[in-house]
Length: 172
Image (cartoon, rainbow, N blue to C red):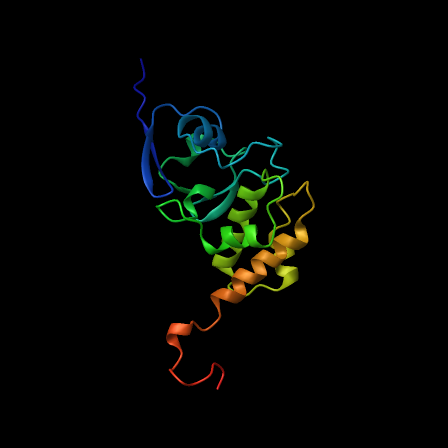
C-alpha cells in the first residue's frame, strides 16, 4: 500500500494541504477550497473565465492539473481585494465602467488585467486588447473592460494629493 503525502499550495496567501488531489486546479479551488469566484464556463481553455495566477503567471485553471500545483502559489479573484473583503481599484473600476455585465467572465478578466498592470504599468489600448485576448466576454463589454483598465493605469500614475506641495498647483 502506497502512502499518499499531502500536497501543499498557497492560495490567496493561505497554505492548504490536500491529500490526493483529483482533477483540475479549478475543481480543487471550487469544490475543495470553496473558492467559487473562479468560474467554470467552457471547460476547454477557450474562454478564460477560469484564469488564475500560478506562481505569478496566468493559467487556465480548467486545464491545469491540481497535482501539478504542489508547492505553488495561486491567486484567484478572491485574492485581489483586501483581507477584509474590500475591492481593489481594478475591481472597483470594472463596476464604475460597467465592465462586469453577467459576471461569468469577470473573474478571469480581472486576473488577466491584474497581471497586465503588474507587468506593464501604462499599457496602450492595443497592448490591453492583446493582453486580454485570451478572455472572452459573451456580453460584449470589451470597450468597457479596456476603459476600466485604462482608468486604473492612469489613476495609479497620478501624483497623489498628499504628495503635492501645499499652495503649489499640480504640474507647476
